[in-house]
Image (cartoon, rainbow, N blue to C red; front, side, top):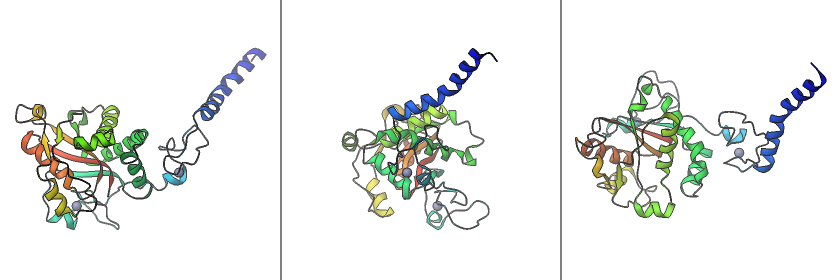
Length: 266
Ligand SMILES: [Zn+2]
Ligand SMILES: [Zn+2]
């Protein structure tokens, strides 16, 4: 190699490192959970762009065995499909619910920052975490592009206060990543307040007639008739909210089936 070419090759090898260093100086990245600086621009792992290695270790995937209906995970070895004790006496209007991660530690913190702290910048990483719910083998034979994403709606007043609907933002991420259409088909017509402290029974009572299907999506001639729906929310806790949404979708929008996907399982 001639001297000129060698200098040129050296400069070309050096350029990406220099560019990374410059990006790091101009846009220092911090861990989205603990705010520690992330030293390298190149991520150390799948989520390394957003988390330090120690916080990433706190993200726990929902892995089998889990309830085939509500996605509640169990310790120990259970072979084959099973339903948990909670689901044995319950009738949900969705087929099944599946979450990407356990709603604990870092995951709980991230969702809290996103939802109540107004940190909209977290939508991409939470969207990526939600996508892992679609790894469930029950989707393997499905053409998900034929399904429709529907977000759990917020009441108008809550939405104005929060300035965005976390479920809609998550839907958008999945829609872009997997090319699945996204329709805001539901409306929350009654404010149900904060439900975190309520039991499942109280939540169900509280959610009665809280949701309706928007006009364009109603009935057999509506845009959702005969379609399969991926109902999207941030966290699945008792399933009361998603059950109430699935109920109006199947009863008033002619939806064939509803599957709930969430970032986390409470
Ligand atoms: Zn961290
Ligand atoms: Zn269950």
